[in-house]
Image (cartoon, rainbow, N blue to C red; front, side, top):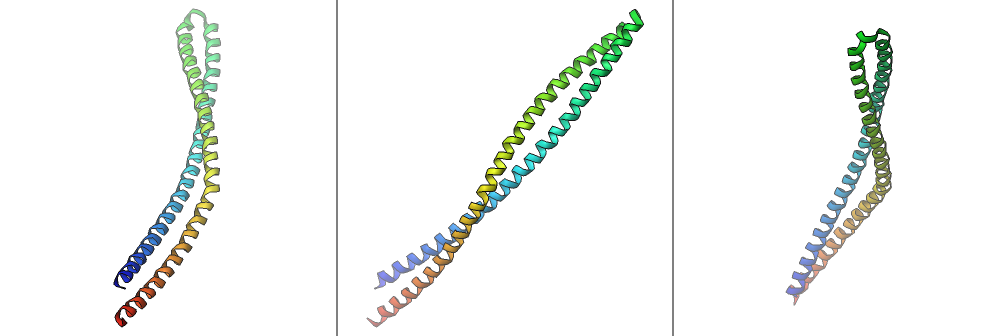
Amino acid sequence: MTETTLSLEQINARVLNNASHTETTAATVAKQAIKGGEAVSETVNAMKEITRKVEIIEDIAYQANMLVLNATIEAACVGAHGKGFSVVASEVQNLATRSEVAAKQISELAKSSVTIADNAGNLLSTIVPSIEKTAELVRDMSVSSNEQAISLSEINTAMGQLDKLT
């Protein structure tokens, strides 16, 4: 009888430990999934803001090219005296072209990243409710395990009383 009582105590302790550990883990995973969804949303917003800033850079490059065109025309009108101005205009045009190319590349990357982050966000938004439901089920299992532990404790008490009687 003493061995049975001891075994019941060990089972009771394991049930309580498993219930507590499982419930804690499920709650932690649910919180992490929610935070992951929030992080993805923040990333999407940041990428959209980057895209808007790149559009400003593209606009500046376009305006610089227009200024270069005007400066080149003016330098041509002045003739030999405008050669230095023409060289500066050429360099500005090179910078504007490089800026425009880089801005387009950044814009493409940002748009691609927004799409990827949106997809990840959509995936997380479908996963999070399932994780929350799982956490809820685990909480229910934890309550059941606690009830089982109480029952085991009562059986253990009864076994102890039987042990004393015998």
